Structures are given as structure tokens and as C-alpha cells.
Image (cartoon, rainbow over all chains, first blue to last red; front, side):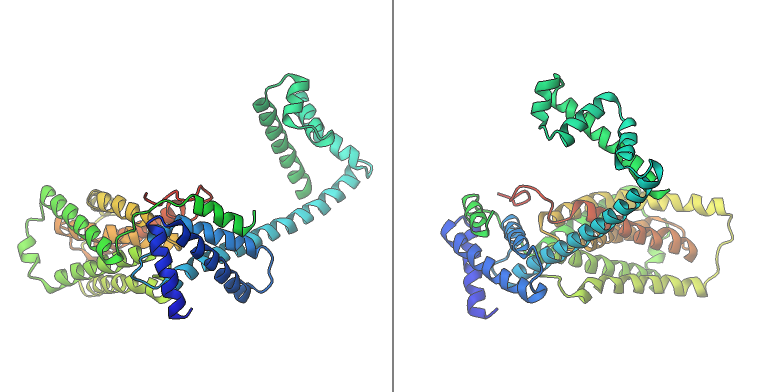
Length: 185
Length: 226
């Protein structure tokens, strides 16, 4: 970043810290453009870069009190952008790993189902649903098979919305546990 | 939401903020507080009876001098890490390690050269516990204060910031402890003094990752002083 641009941004940030909205708007628009360019250089055409730009803008907004106008603006801004990019990359990696694990679990579950219940998925799912209480089973079927909302289920069954959410949560937990152990076997 | 819409929303949310004081000023302020707490605590607990003669021993002075160096370097690192862009250079994060190495080397040399007191395992533990308690008491207020002050910034490397923050708090507390503790056995100093500071630093790193992490998903301006 050349020194002219840096001092212009530094001055805008100084005025923004004092509450000048026009300076702040100009600053954020310019920062968004600089950060977008920086991210393209660092991460190419990777997905979600606009999310990183927005997270950087949020972080700059939240931490604007830490900027010292006596120091250059560029290192402060790029440090935040770099940190947001690394954090984004970490989240993406975790997400990808979960997806791979999900696929493996799916294959294992499929194989297990085929063997366990005469090759039928319905038998596998019937067994899984059989582990739930009648209330949990009823709620999960209405939520997932019939596609009803929590409010609609509350209207039909007379259960409170919070009770429906708790029952569904407990049911999912039971299913997750059983499917996980089935996949491990 | 598009970025332009986000910008408009942030502009609408803009409030004047009070800028953080500079790193040097905040570091000095905290160091003054730490000295005051440790000084008063040491005075209140009563220094070791042979302190005047110990203060004439170069090895004793060097060990405590290296602790003060560790104190200065780690405090500066913790405060620099609390400001984005100030501690991006990886090497600058390792400066406080110099203080640790120096202190460890001085104690290690004494351990190699000197004779060790022959005591039982239980007695060894029994003599160490008071040192842990002293360090905890003397370092508690500076430790809480440094965590609070670092959190006022925006540490991007929260683990490192937590590590050096608690090392910075435990180093002067350990100087105070060494003014109180009558045990000079190098093994005692290695385990109950040096390892305690290291362990406190590791606890600081864990706490830092938990409590100093700069960017939780929260509303904008959560930590910005209005």
C-alpha cells in the first residue's frame, strides 16, 4: 500500500473513531475493495471470499478502537484480513473433513442396513425409530417426513414448542448414537 | 447480505470510540501495578531473614535479574499481541523465551555445580507447596489485570497473548517468592519456581484461547469501549 493511500485511510479511520459517518462509509468501501484484492492474491478463486471480506469489515468495525492513528493503517487492516482468511480456511477444512466423514458413515450405514434387515432401508430406519419414545417418534416423523414446522406440530398435538424442540433434540441424539454404533460394527 | 449493505449497516451503527492507549503506555502502567502488588505482598508476607546477605550474591541477583528481563519481555509481547499488525513477525513472539532460557540456564548451572539437599519425596513436595501459594497470591491481581487489559485490545493470536500475559504476571510474582522463600536448593528452584512459571504460562495459553479469542460471533462493537 503506498504511503498516500495509507495516510488517507488512516485519516478516515481517525475521523471514524470520532464518529464521522461519511468518512467511515468511504473508509469501509475502500477497505472492502482492498481486502477483496488482497484475498484474491492470497487465495485465488477459492469460494467464500466475499464472506471473508464481510467478516473483515465486521472485525474492523468491532476493533476500530485498537487502531492508533500514529501508526500506518495498512498493517493493522491486513493483519485482520489475514487472520479472517486463515480462520475461514480452518473452518472450510473442518467442514470438508466432516463431509468426508459423513460420506464414509453413509456408506457404512448403507452396508449395515443391507445386511441387517434383509437389505431394506426401511427396516433399518424402522429399527432406529423403534428406539425412540412414542412422543419423540411422532415429533420426528412430523418434522422430517411430513415437513411440518414446530408451530404447526404444536397446533396439532397440543405440545408446547419448547417441549417439541427438546423431544426432537433428544430423539436426534438417540438416533445419532445408535447409527454411529451401527456404523462402527 | 451484500458487502455494500453490510457497510451501510455498520455506518448506521457507528459510535465514537475511545482509542486504546499506546502499547508502551499500557505496558508501563501494568508493570507499575504488578510491581506495586508484588512489593506490597512481599513486604506483608515478610522477606526471608537472610535477604541482605543473599542480595550480595551475584548468582542470586542474576537469577532474579533474568526473571525481571522475562517480566519485561513477556509483558511487552502480550500487549503487542493485543493490537492487530504489531506482532505479525513470528520471531518477535519468541523474545520472552530468551528470558526463560537465561533463567533456566542460571538455575541449571547452579544445579550442576552445587550440592543438593538430601530430603524425602514428601518433604520435597511439602517445601514446594508454599512457593506455589506465594506465587499465586502475589501474581493474582497482576494476572487478572493483564488478562483484562489484553482483552481490551483485539489479540489475533489469543493463545500466545494468554501465554505471555500469565508468564508476565508470574515472573514478578516469582521474584517476590524468591525474596520470601528460604530454600536455595537448585532442584527446588527448578521444580517449584521455574516449572511453576512455565506451567502458569501454559495455563495462560489455554485461558487465552478460551477468553482472549478476538472474534467470537457476537454483535459488532462488543468489546469496543464507547
